[in-house]
Picture 1 (cartoon, rainbow, N blue to C red):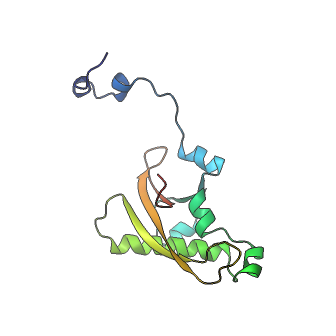
Picture 2: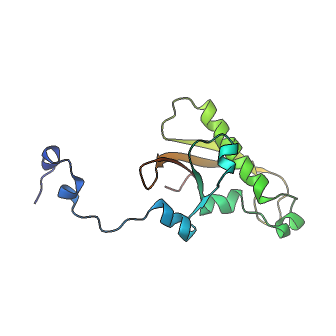
Picture 3: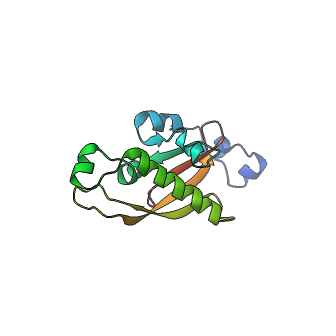
Length: 145
């Protein structure tokens, strides 16, 4: 059995933890619908790295249908996505030296079939490695990882 000090001599995590049992890549999360790639609009908002939203953040802050517009207030997904990206980019600009994650506020009309005025929510932005180690941005609800 390996001892913790063995990791100092052999930095290969596999020698300490054993073989990887399972992996779940960012690409798989996109294919499964757990992440939503925002595409070119991220660049328009000033991002230099790919940006995705978790499915939960998308459902809460971006998703909007014509039925929602009839029941609540006229909006569309493109405009709601722009609001998320604009506020995320603004939060990055004003949060000098915040590390790899930050919380930022967003006003959005909740998709509840009734509300017509915007309410504040908090979103979390995390910068981390993509599947090939490249920088990527993920926007999520505060309780998500």
